[in-house]
Length: 130
Length: 66
Image 1 (cartoon, chains in turn brown, yellow):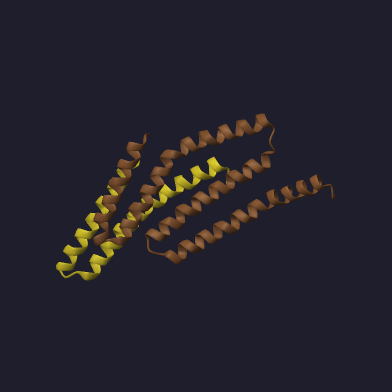
Image 2 (cartoon, chains in turn green, blue):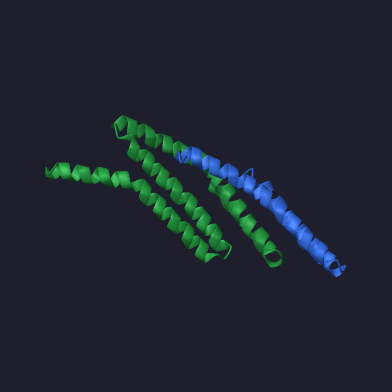
């Protein structure tokens, strides 16, 4: 799955999208969505390998697993939100895209709270207040 | 890229519905033309939603999102 196949695939999808845009704009958007999803599906295997390597490094380094899982979740949320927001922008719905990104920011903030609390506890312990 | 045929199928259905729409319109059956367009969009939507379903389940399994 090298880059040439990906770029070829994206070009074909773009051209077909333009062909359809004049007659049927809604189908052009669906071609874009399908192409984006297909390209990511091709890359999902490699991302899985990278995540496994991070897991192995974390276990060897004895890191606390909660933080790694949270970071992984945040990356996943960020990616899906970006995918959705870009698709909304392609369809011309800028306001909807901003709402999707806002929801993603809230979800990520909620997920990041435990890490922030842990960090503050650590700092207080270092300073010796607690 | 095993999904390349899906993209060609979508483009094929899209062009087919566009042609069908214009021929039906010239034949004077305006309502039938709109129905044909709706059918084409529905078929393509089903394919795309199936693809998105697999995408989102893959992302959930890789990023442990559930």
